Image (tube, rainbow, N blue to C red; front, side, top):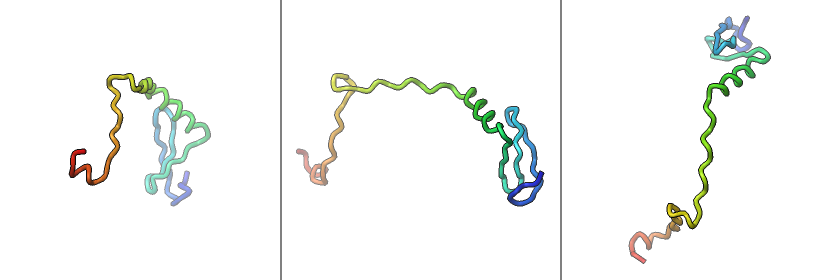
Amino acid sequence: MKCPVDGATLVIADRSGVEIDYCPDCRGVWLDRGELDKIIDRSMAQTPPPPPPQQARGYDDPGYRKKKKRGGFLEDLFDF
């Protein structure tokens, strides 16, 4: 099969059991119908689930600190 971009001969590679056509010259990749879905399904099976979200901190939490508002240049020079 020829590359639609530059006319070079496409090379077939096997990635996780899916045959991918790619051009060694322009590095373009072409997939047949359903191959992208197979790649996505197999990559989702390999990635671990995301960690559970952390609880938000409130005012009563001992680790909570209110952010100090940044003042002007006078605060850098003088202690108020």
